[in-house]
Amino acid sequence: MTTLASNALAALRASCDACFGTPTVWPLIENAYSEPQRFYHTLAHLAELFDQLEPFRGAALWPAIELAVWGHDVVYATSLPEYADNEALSATWLLNVTQAHCSADWLRTHALHLALAQQWIRATKTHKLPPECERDPAQKHAALLFLDADLAILAAPLERLIDYDKGIAQEWAQDPDNPAEAFRLGRLQALKSLREHTPLFHTDELARRESLARENLDALIARYETRQ
Image (cartoon, rainbow, N blue to C red; front, side, top):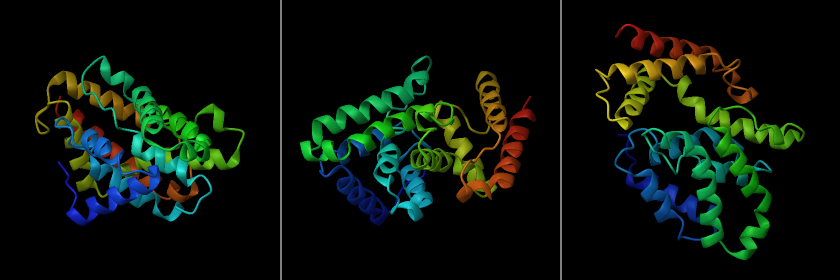
């Protein structure tokens, strides 16, 4: 499991408090992303996403992107059929938590941001642009930035990508070096489905990493195919 240094954890907490306008949300975020079944979808994953998105903090819809990052994996079941509802439940969690913990002024100010963040969280199920964002260029770009950032791990150095893949296996209670046949086949199918996305990255900011991401995907797929 990738862990965060104390200073990075403190910075993440301060960002969370500033985003939601209250310190009461952070313990919920920290507890959720620290669940024992998590090995990749952890607080370190949030920190990596925010690092990817750091250049866009000044964007008009940054609050929606930030809310989507905080909430997108907050519900993460690794058993079937619960796994299929992770995205929808995470979006609902974000709505419920902000209504319970954020001030009335915050809710009025961020009504649009909150609605967009929920759309984008649900979109991580397929990593396809929500149709509601198609007509507004600013919303479309912000949504695609968030979705691209969530897949940016695919363009990491191969060693980091293999660590990511092993973390996914561990989240499903698998030996990452010798997973069960059912897991191997399911993971292989998921990776091949992802490879069919054309393009993988939709924004100019991440399009330059497309070739590397595809090479990495091919390498991961080959690792699973050689285990047959």
